Amino acid sequence: MNHAQLTALGRALRLLGEHGDALGADTPDAKLHEIREDLRRAVERLDESVSTAAPSTRCREHPGGPVDEAAPDLCLLCETRRRSARRAEYGGGPAPQQPAEPAPSRYGVRGDRPQPQQRWLPEAWNGQAWQLCGTPRRDRREAELYLAAQRRGPRPASAYRLVHEFTDYEVLRTWGVPMRVDPEPMS
Image (tube, rainbow, N blue to C red; front, side, top):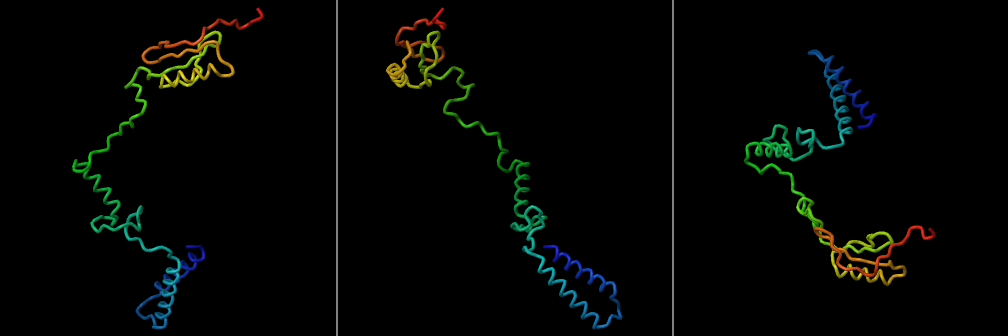
């Protein structure tokens, strides 16, 4: 309803209120016909103002929702919610929702598997210490092929090794000889 419609409807209803105050037993028929015309104009203004259908329920949340004659507010949606809550109180309905267990993970949960997963770590000697030179692999053959490609690369390290990680660390195979390199070669 826009402001002009609201103003016109208010004026028509106020005029009807004044007619109601002036009514009496000796009101002439001409005055009654005038009241009838003003009433008809007020109803027309009201019809122009209303843009939606009349609510089918007395529910504020679902005014146009489905009707349940047994519900106090005639709202089927709210009454269904109330009924399921009552059923759950008396134990007749579905069990209350338990917190869902976490979805099983491909890698497991830390508490389930306290040891590290089995994997192979490719390491290169940088002149002072062994350092990880690639992504830890789950497949030993893949890790060995990776280190072979590193040895054939443009800047190979002086030594490579493959470390097996499971409950502890175990060096499986070493390529080359690690040599100690002085960090300051001029001294």
